[in-house]
Amino acid sequence: MLSMQDKQTIIEIVRDVAKTEILPRFRSLTGDAIDTKSGFDDLVTVADVAAEKAMTARFHEALPDTLIVGEEAVAEDESVLDLLDSSDLVLIIDPIDGTWNYANGLSTFGVLIAAAYKGETIFGLLYDVVNDDWIETSRGQGTWYVKPNQAPTQIVLSQQATDPSLVGVFSPFLFKDKGHRKSAAETQTKYARVIALRCCCHEYRTMLNGNVDFFISPKPNSWDHAAGILAIQEAGGVVQMLDGRGYQPSVREGMIVVGRSNEVVQSIIKDFNWYNQ
Image (cartoon, rainbow, N blue to C red; front, side, top):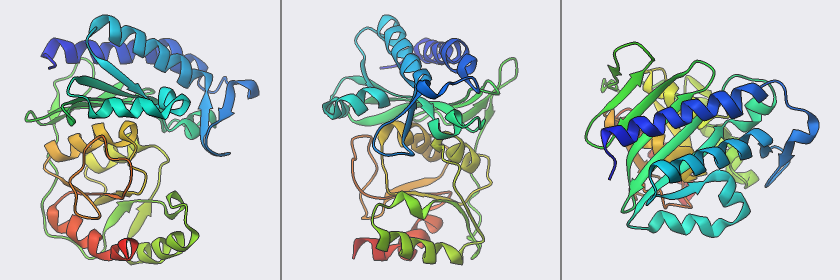
């Protein structure tokens, strides 16, 4: 699968590509460098494309037997997603997570990399491009915050009893159905605070920092969630699909419910039970 050296190679490739393809274009994009995909607010930039192309080439060189699933490649050809069911090693790339933020000059963006083997996530990287630090996780080896030239710090989520006033990550506008949007907006009023950063990398990092109790998403794209979900699980958190299934990178439909404890997850599932009715 992946050796410790392989993981370090992946991290160094991401850091290098971020320095050469992503950071130089930040707050320097011209209008013709930004395009749309599925909708007016689903953006892609020349930096997304260039970074994914560069990472893909270098990952193939470093790990020649590895399959690659990149967000931008999937946008061009959805059949690429079929690779997620492979029994081989697959690297899942989100070259710029939070493209809308990136394109609008906001620093809340990052790079997400996940490695899956036989359909299960075995490694995840949540990289902050601007600050050059990251969270890395491996199945059975915990979740760690890493900053260059400092000792890694293990992350363990609190399992304290649930406060009735939860803080979460969620946006009703992720739902396509307007009725679902209304129900979701009404549901979230019971929580103390609900945020949406438009960047799964930093939303998961916020939760791993202990500042958020739960995370909900009805868009289970593997490039957005696989790395973060493994990081949450390895830190002691709980992940479940709203309908009771376990999460796998190949999941294409349904709502992901992430919580710092099983108590939180079951509470959120109860609150959103209208979605499956």
